[in-house]
Length: 81
Image 1: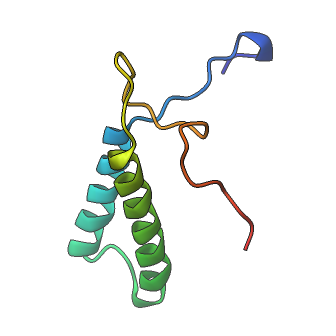
Image 2: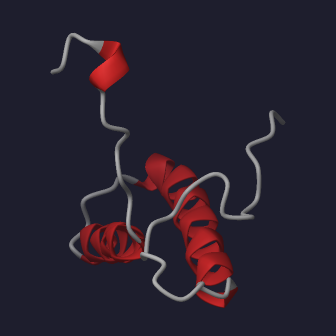
């Protein structure tokens, strides 16, 4: 880890990373990696991830833009429920 916060590079998350997470959840579920009492929370997380992927798939990319998901890309904001 970088001890100098001024030089820290922000983490990068690509749409393909989100797709990979969704596929991982699906594969783990298929293999029976989750117990019954965990299924509702795993399903809720999967549904939320799917919504984010669908949202960013519809956001038009500017020419030369990367495939990076960022909080300032016009996506849904985190709210406390």
